[in-house]
Image (cartoon, rainbow, N blue to C red; front, side, top):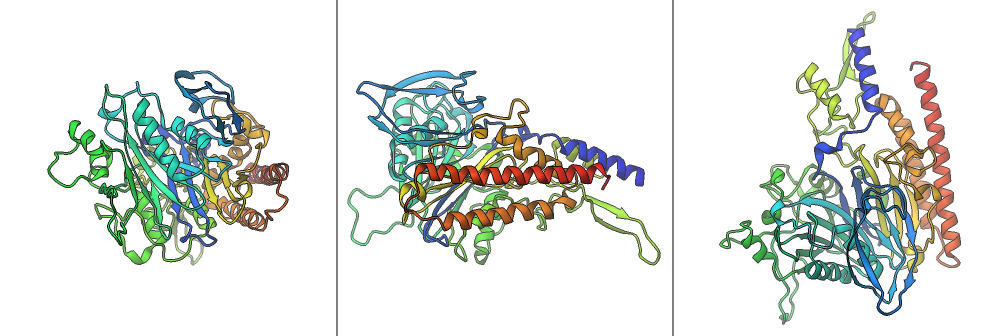
Length: 528
């Protein structure tokens, strides 16, 4: 028994030191949580994103620019897997559109996420029917985000711009959701193509009520399409404010996704095959149920509320905590049956306890190994935090502050269940140089990804033994950083000061994670 346990422990350690097999879960990548300004503790509007998959991790703050008349904007494809800014490997020019006279500075992540005007965007993929995808469409979702951040200073205009550009030049991507926020409101924007050989797009967008929270996690969630009447009767107050392209129903009808007889429901028409029959996954249910337990939501419901009023005001740290969720301690806990037997000693009888190597981020091969040895040991659940995350952000937008300091993107690389978050402001002009290179294709000890990934992976070798110390450090530093950001004075916050502040937090976390890494090497090197 002890020999088998030792072999299993070694196998687990070796497996966990590698990367999770994200290929199995294509179409189940990315999570976005939204919080309206009246639902947050301090009046912030929040949007967020986990970029789950082997996407590029380099980050750069692109400057604002003025453009001469006649300048054209290049629409590119293939930027998601580049190694650094300016890398053209695999990048193709798709087309050109007229450039704006002035473009705003923006934070250039794989899915561009925030600009200098406190406009921020999160993203999740829901794939949708492949019959709607036309690669000849010019715009992918990341290029729509880029243009919106360069040209818009509010969420509503961003939604309308992205919709109109995709309709005019064609949408060439799979079904996507963008969670588009500014310092006053947040919208959920869902878009699909119109057919294999057709140029255009079909889309809908719903404003999250100011006192509500919402979540998108790879399932379309928009239901009935209720367009506002051209002449609104007195006292007209819709449940949800909505925008939509004129062709949504027609696209579904022409592609056999709706029979034209019953009520048209967006998510039913454009849902992906893997989740037919309901409009939510584990993550939507867990997050909404956590924030509004009084609603008594159940997992067997075919449809969850599009958004909910939380039982209490939501602090940004609560959103950060939700992004660390692996459901440990709940019915969804994947580690609950990974046990080891403690032999009897004296009068103490033998007992089974959770194994130190029990880990919510097991690779596919290790789950298969455990289930072969003991069928039913691990039932896979798609957790919020996953080991194959490239980067994530939680972005606060604050209307009582100048734009330069009001927008703060809490940026994290690698597993959001383990890594610290670094505040990057709308008014920053640069991010630390370690973020300028991607670490996905090669080991680079000095790039931001590997600064944190080394300790993160090592901790999973014996997660039940390391998580208390590890997560304690995450939460402690997170709270300190949030308090420091909350206490910053708007007066005198120059771009240089903001850049320095961001870099100082980053360097503190690099030092802390290096110390964690060394401490764990010592522990494991000594055999305990």
